[in-house]
Amino acid sequence: MKYLILIQSNPQWGAAWDAFTPEQQVEAMAVYVDLVQELRSSGELVDAEQLAGRETARAVRSTDGVATDAPLAETKEFLSGYYLVDVASYDRAVEIAARLPEASWGGVHVHPILAEDAEPDVSVA
Image: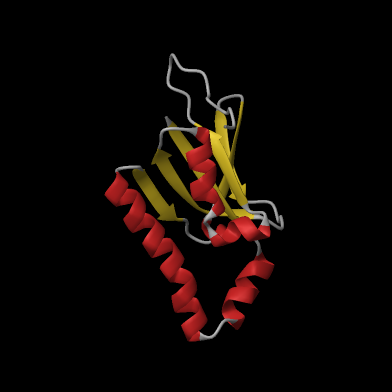
């Protein structure tokens, strides 16, 4: 079953990243590189991307068939990336999400992707 793992960031987290030494930044990035390599090798990775900064994102609303866009509302948290995985269970998706550094900051969400004829498997073993 496929799951979308959404990564949220916060401007304060960005400031923390900027305070890292270059060596600490390399070490932190290795977590993502290693995870992507592992998921590719296992065949579980469908896609993963870092999103452009929130200043480039737009909120789109449609009223009476007319679409308008505007900058995102000023919020503390914003989407910064995602992993789309195809794994055997919800537990496996959560296991992957928990390995992301943002999980220690509370900024990772796991969403089952429903096939047309499927019910989500969110049972925990």
